[in-house]
Image 1: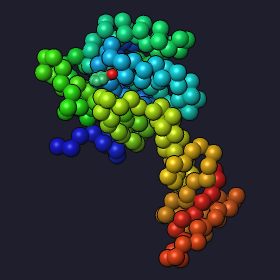
Image 2: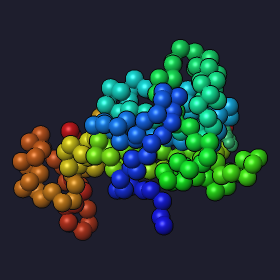
Image 3: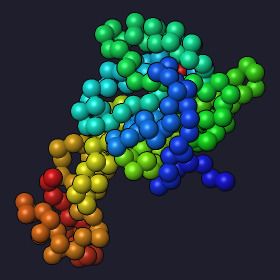
Amino acid sequence: MPGLTIGDDLPNLQVETNHGKMKLHDYVGDSYTILFSHPGDFTPVCTTELAMMAAYANKFAERGVKLLGLSCDDVQSHNEWIKDIEAYNKGHKVTYPIIADPNRELIKQLNMVDPDEIDSSGYNLPSRALHIVGPDKKIKLSFLYPASTGRNMDEVLRVVESLQKAAKYKVATPANWKPGEPVVIAPAVSNEEAKEMFPQGFDTANLPSGKGYLRFTNV
Ligand code: BEZ
């Protein structure tokens, strides 16, 4: 069976976190939520990632996005680890909850397993998985990084902005897009509709096919 991926419903699992027990859908509520997993507590790259997420927490909150970590150690270990993360972080508190998954059941259901990382007891560890969940509780974006590669939170923030623009305006964001740059108009929007929807106007790239499908606007 293929694992949880974009377009799927986030399973409404009961989880234990360092902020108490919760159902995933209750946590998501009406917000976008970033659910991100880590191979383990007290590991170097993970410590930098959780610290960086804490540093970016306000930027995500300004965009209505909640954060929810997962690491397969237990809650007591998470609480001890947070002291290290905050000490490393110098000033940014870890205010988001971190799910515990000592039996590795959640990571299977959430498609966060790294087949190449096995702990000393022979259990699979989580990959650096990240799901962006929409207010409709569906997975909007999903990626899996190996343990050796820490994630770039600027990229996570960039895709949040892209997802939110696409949901609001029937646009998409082109390669290497950054917030503030022109976006492209979705192919399903006719030129007549585009004139109504984008009164600020749009530019159509002049390409050999003459099909006029690459249209840029600002929103
Ligand atoms: C780390 O977070 O540094 C890490 C964790 C598991 C395997 C390799 C690196």
